[in-house]
Image 1 (cartoon, one colour):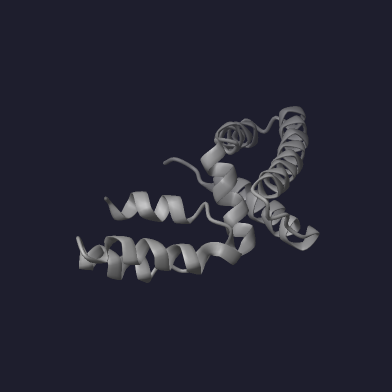
Image 2: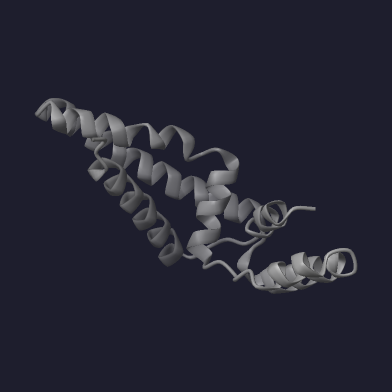
Length: 138
């Protein structure tokens, strides 16, 4: 078993169950691979918002959103105010839809999240968009 596989699986475990699951995984691999067990034991419990983002990523929900960053960057480079306005409106709609999808995934997993966590998810997604808009290939 590879560390990346274990980490990927653990990041989908709800934060309140993470420590118990990490310990179980650590014990399961300890006899066969002590180094892996040690590394697994060092994984940190994700914040609830990070867990929701991981759920969205695992579900493939973030894939389409990634395309908006380059489109916005191009519209800005072309100084096209209509395209910028349209793409920003689309971005706001996508951020809202992703935040709701994350809330739904968490609830479906049996661990509904608070409105504050959803706001953190929304802020994280928005920050990712802003970062992708400011990245310019040179």
